[in-house]
Image 1 (cartoon, rainbow, N blue to C red):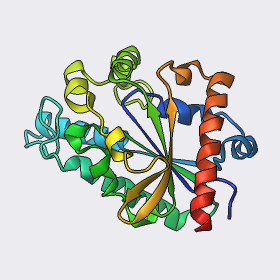
Image 2 (cartoon, one colour):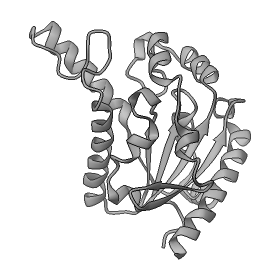
Image 3 (cartoon, helix red, strand yellow):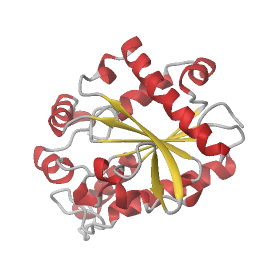
Image 4 (tube, rainbow, N blue to C red):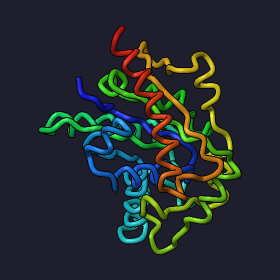
Length: 241
């Protein structure tokens, strides 16, 4: 058994700190990252680039070829609500293809947000593959909607709307898609494990209302180390069963 997680799922509201945590971990040497955070060589899967490519393709279809949009409305919403679930299926497919061919052991970090209007996490996790569910642990970064909205506005860069760290949702979309979050309902039955399709997925919560992910440095490191140590203990407990 490796001394690091095979798969770490990162969930949170938009701009809550998921990508900031990944960016921070990327700056740490692999040996130190394993010793302190139980994260090995990193492979990142994020559904935002997939989603953004649909917007770009639809704009090309509509404005260049005068053809109907395939995925999104001109206002930037999905034509079909189950496209949110398709993104999760795509993440699972990308994980399968990558894990089939990779030669070295890694920690795969899988990042996504889901508000209740898109089915929430309860629905999203039903579309993860069994290959992922049997190996995954989860870190949820907890911020209020108010804090998510504040950071979403702050990171806005109109010239880099496709950027992982600088994309920003319009106010109306934030309100519609992410004001309500079902994480507390999803985790209500067990303080340590998510129960999904017969799998017990260890989880923990990193509190970030004070925005330690933007501060970075040792403040973030200490809090992240504490939560991932707790998660590692749950992972080992599950593996021992």
